[in-house]
Image 1 (tube, rainbow, N blue to C red):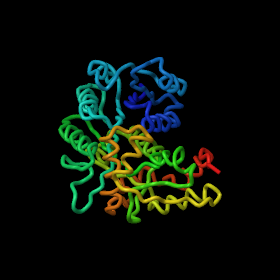
Image 2: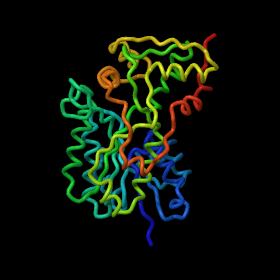
Image 3: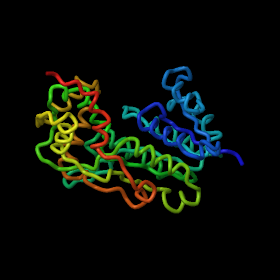
Length: 320
């Protein structure tokens, strides 16, 4: 029996990397019942070579090279797709989807989308009229998925990633403060990227029958088991840092976006979208939700933010 081939598109990023790690940790991979390959632009790059050391086969190609995508899909039974939030994201992701659908081999694609929150008084997070620019992109990509006629697919919509708070760890926490554009104390069910990787890996390994009956054509919102307000997060930081008092600065949306541009190198359009995700959706009480039964059946245990902070607290270099 031939091994199942799973192609990971976006394997050098955090979510794609987490999916690779989950796949190579499975007994199916150890037994060589599953082969994992990664689409990479540079076969000799450090990130590609790190994947190779894990037993991942490297396939040269890129999202903007349709010929390379068709070649990569030729032997892929399953495909995982995640892409950075970039201005040409719709074209890039649709190129992958179209290559997967055109392939005689590929039967199933798992795509990582973005938060599926819905709030009163504003268009949905993922919609053609969304105030979140990359939310509009994902709406267009979802339309392309909806148009697929033979490819099975699932779109995963993670809530706020815990990893988004790494900026606090390497930034303002050193000065015993954090700044967020929250004037209220609404909550969000934060999710660890590694849980998304675990979920995607489990989906990719399912039988065609299970995919078709339970997961095909679904857009699934994913949140962790616990919800947190920004003051909750500040309290967790303080406890992890041996009860050092942490000040919460409640800044404006514009100040927060400016900090992302100057401190983290975000392009202005992306910084504005991230800031609005906080003020419109998190503050609008639209992000405190649980994962649906289809997700909990597959992945009942989620990591907590307390655990994530405990892992990273040693990286905070407090200024005395």
